Amino acid sequence: MEVLKQAEEFENMKMGHMSTSDRVEASREAKRLILSINEVYKKTKDANLMKLMKRLTVKKQKIEKRLKGKPMM
Image 1 (spheres, rainbow, N blue to C red):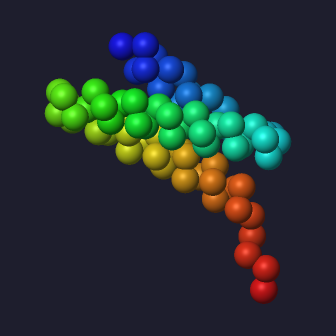
Image 2: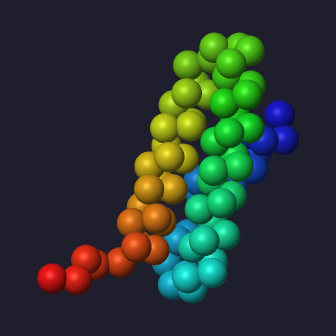
């Protein structure tokens, strides 16, 4: 379960003071982790995997929100 270890490390990673390229890389990594966990979830239907995917998705959304920046008015 290498993917679960990577997901845990990603989840515990600090997100402060990241450059734009770091944010893009983190967003892509989150997507990769979510999709790979989803493949395992399809076979096992483990509720803990679903919770992990949801937590990673929330973190990914926060990163992407920061990437998009404030809307211009």
